[in-house]
Amino acid sequence: MAKKEIINKVFNSVWFVILIGGLLLGKTFLFYHNTIAINEPIEIETVVGTVCFIIVIVCFISILPNRTRIITSIILDFLISLLLFGDQVYYVFSNSVISVAQITNLQYGEEIAGTLPMVMQVKQILYFLDMMVLIGLGIGKVIKWEKKEKATKRQMIGKVITGIAGIVILAIVGINYIEKGKLKSYNKDLQIREATIFGYHIADFTNSFTIKQQTKYKNQDSMMQDYYELKEKYDTKYGQEMYPIQGMLEDKSVIIVQLESVQEFVVNKEINGKQITPNLNQFLSENIEFTNMHMQSYSTTADSEHSTITSIYPMENGMSFSKYYTNTYDDLFKIFNKRNYHISYMHGNYPYFWNRGNVYGRFHLNELVLKEQFEDLSENINGDLSDELLYRQAVQKWKTYDSPFLSYIVAASSHTPYTLEGLQDKSKVSIDVGKYKDTYFGNYLEAMNYADYAFGVLIQELKEAELYDDTAILVFGDHNGLNRYNEELIDFLTYTSPNMTDIDLKLNYTRVACGFKIPEMKSIQIEKPVNKLDIKPTLAYLCNLEDTFSLGTNFFANKDFVCLNNERIITSRYYYDEEWYDRKTGEMLNWAELDKATQKLLEEYYQDMKMELDISNSVTIHNLLK
Image 1 (cartoon, one colour):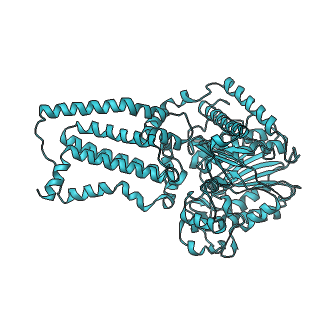
Image 2 (cartoon, one colour):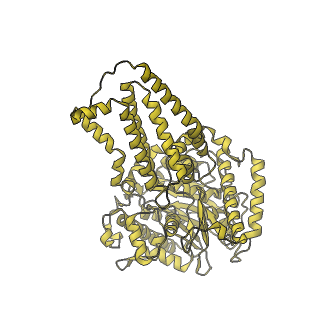
Image 3 (cartoon, helix red, strand yellow):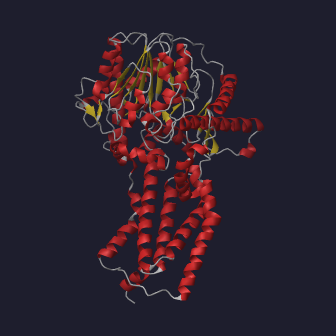
């Protein structure tokens, strides 16, 4: 029989469905290999569940009539391949997989498109290689539909048995895996390991309709009772102050500067003999430097703002601003408003971007300054007002404010894709990235260098306006700028630290630059972990303001751990990501070999993390602070 006839016969038989099933199985394991199994083996539970889901798909398609069977196979192959591809691309960007909740973020397609150079990989073509082959065979008329004769009694019995087998496997195994994927953990990697990627997505879809029923707290009373217990525990255990500076900023002006994508690893680093961030380095050396400031989620600029302003965790990427923007919080602006501060927020983009017009329109602001409110729009970088123009005009506005004032300003020039498109004077990038030139990493370093140049302009403008000396300035990066395993990044990091572990890379991914200028306070370096949730209680502590609801704690208290919204825990010594690790060695801890005191300590960290996330998500989903 000719090769062409064999291919066509397979195409028109049940073997085509089995072949598609095998390819989907291979693609699924390709997805696992490039995501949850990058550094850990795929567990047998995940393997068994995945195989069972594929068998169920094959069984159900096999009982269909010939043409319907072929069309359904091709459509399912394409849709599942597209889903796995999308999951992997999104995972490269945010170390998380796509959720139904992300559909609303499609409105920010331009920003999403800007990240594609970072997340696209040649090997991702494997998800669609069979589609290309199939199209080629169709164009070459190697395969074509064949009209099938009516099924025999034997074939009908076979289809019935196959269908029953599919139903039984789904009932016994599939439903169990779907149940495991339901919202019992905030860690999506764990959900995928326990439920498979298919069980996760099915459960995620159902979770989107039942999310209110799955929160721990349904009313304010029960939530507040546990909140007060948690805060009392923290006050008792972590209440001791590292420095007795309560009220040191009372009635002083405060400027919060949020820098786009500025990770901590660029601080005090050189490339080809030049500092990447000389102005930020000087600011940190003269003031308070936090070397372990961590972002709250693998996420967006909006989530950083949400964490800073409300001192609670963000939901799915950007959801706190896009879906839950009508919520009421005991927010940063509200507590400063009670003391008659002049309050403003500034950002060089339009009101619709990340829904900021609506979000900040509900806060207690004296002035909301978005792109349309600035006079000089002559330089835009990647669509946003350049940092330099943003800062220069901000200082002019601050000069007119009555003291004291609180102003939150968000820079954006160092945003992905880091091309600095629109920058009129290229000499403002003062570093030579050498071998990294025209790579994504090289562009990132140049963008950080420009962001630092503009930050230097801000400091100089404040000094010339005589606003610098007596004003508190808090500056921090909003979130990561690079994928955790970017090859050039690892090359750059290991040049100076050749013994970096995977845990070091994970911590580098979440750690952002952070410094705090408090007038009349000496230069200090603080190494304990802190996060964005700590900003509101810290400013309340320093300015003698009443803070009635914050999940963070004062920077200067002795709390020694922080959490991310996906169940990661970072302590001074340990790191939790499904299992506990020693930060110094990067090795996973053997629980049985730990002494009872250490086991108790780690268990307390975990329970406190769960309590914080349960409270935070309940507050957001049910608007419990209204």
